[in-house]
Image (tube, rainbow, N blue to C red):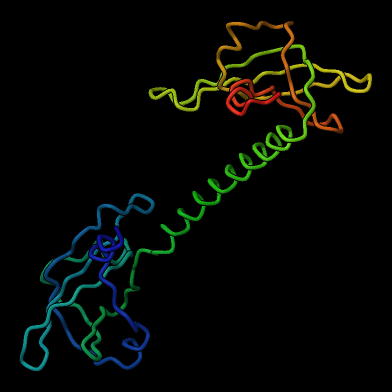
Length: 220
């Protein structure tokens, strides 16, 4: 992708030095090409291609600009003033337009940050559940709602259920929520039924008792 952008946006280095120290020359405009994959307020940048004489040899250069007011009146074969220095040239009176390659990295950074944020959330949830698996006390909760999470439309990946339940700790009723992909729960349980849960020592955290994990690890 980077190479494609570079090809679409010919870039001239040391423009300010060429403006200050370059030699004045005249060039023939041979092509005005719209950069169609970039639109700014309904206008496209253009790449100007021009030829000029350099020590008896024909030299061709390209320069990208975004100045709709100035470029709208340009035509092929127009004579334009340029400045030349150390093998590079620029048209006089135009600012160079170049695609800011920081932008793709900026977008990537945003995507990475969002992904990292969700990974942290997932880690925190899993961390709490592992702590409950190790130290939680088995108790009973009463189901008050079961909400289906459909996941991705075609693959069904990510399907799960959010189960809200009520339990009592030290005489105080608490509301807990746990996510599971144990869909047998909806077949065997309904709102108002009891379900086994794990509760932390302070009673603030809880989760559904992991029946499958318990069987696989021969919990007692």
